[in-house]
Length: 303
Image (cartoon, rainbow, N blue to C red; front, side, top):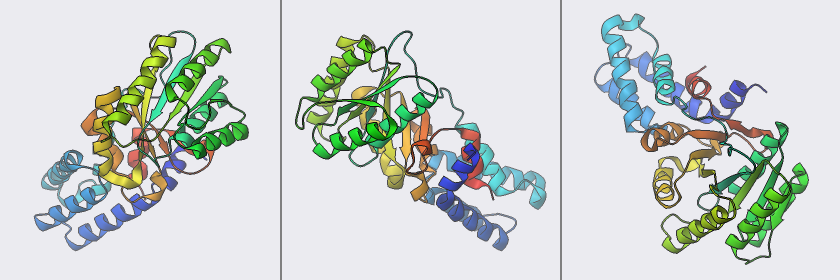
């Protein structure tokens, strides 16, 4: 399936809610003045687009209607254009170390899909002809180790793992050493889910990163925060705190296909200035897609 079709299918719930509301508002008040603009603002905020981009869209809509009247561009087209302009991707795709192994750490709270994302990223780079390794550094949950091993078997990706309860930093060290010894291109490190409010757990995550850097200078080269789209703008607080602790390089937004709040991608990227690198649009390995601002905007507001 083409990327635009993937985005369109994944954002079905968000798009259906937005387009329904926009049509209802415009059909009832075609001149889009006063109360109608307030309703439009409410609909955009309801999709968790955030205040900044919502105000940009309202300003652009008001300007178009004042200068061109009802013959101006339709509201959905104006909104899509504003979102695309606000989401210009500064850095797309995975970073790559200057030479040798590239280490990618997946971080986030419990239940966002870090383990699955790590496996899907390994599948992605393998499909591009590069060699990938997975590290099971969520040693708090025995189920997490089993889950990533099952993904490894399914996708034919080797997994470096320790015993349940093992020191996560020691597993990370061994995984980096294994990646170097086996001339791997990428190592994807699945870290334990942790609440961003738990200082001791954030310190442990910092330790995991320090140990990897000692084994391979500069590692991890990429630190991706995995966010669950169904939490909407609540994900903003997670992103702020993780960024303070481990200097994030990008975001992965999962479960976009299960929410009517798909606009949260826009709000988070606008506030934090971090690139959204991938979005999860389904359960299959190929359903993790590179983020494309133009196609995302069109899928959010298109028919």
